[in-house]
Amino acid sequence: MEKPQILNISPGGSVIYITPKWLTDKLGPFDVDIAAAKGSYNLIGNKLNFEGPTDSENCGLAAKLKPSHFVWCNPPWGKKNGEQDFMRKMAEHNNGILLIPSKVTGRGFHDFVYPVASCILFWRGALMFESELGEPRLNFGGYQGVTLVAYGDKAAGRLGRVKDLGVLLKVQK
Image (tube, rainbow, N blue to C red; front, side, top):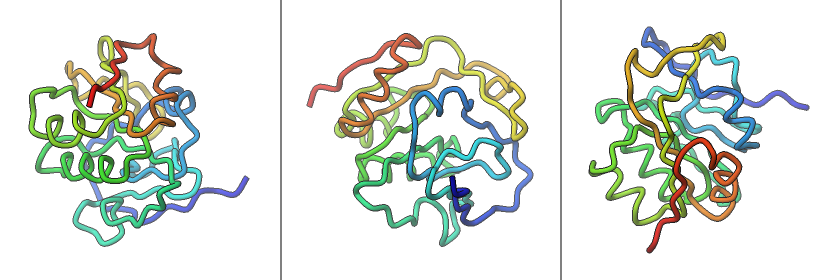
């Protein structure tokens, strides 16, 4: 298999929290990762992996996605890091899975999840993220619930594969 292309490697020094490979393997395959972690051993996108930073022309936010691209996104968390911009991108593309903090009363959920998503999986307990080398890393040194958001029917079917990891809700529109 041909190695996926990596675009826009960002300079950094920030702590990186990588989605565990077992989870993306269970939910995949994905064509594109629009918020890939720099230096990750877990290349999620089979075709493209955009590695930020958010103010770059080659950031996943600027990606010209084909409607057929099935997209993975675990964005940089926090408003100042562009989390809501990635939520908007996923809602507009409407074909993929988004992993975000469970801030269910926040503007991002109300603007880009509830009106567009097919279903939402609220994770039970804390998700153990990984370092660039695949070592366990609890999210941000403490507890923050996570949510998987399915955009489109294909993504909803994929979340069905991990429904035992939390509570899976179909979004009524």
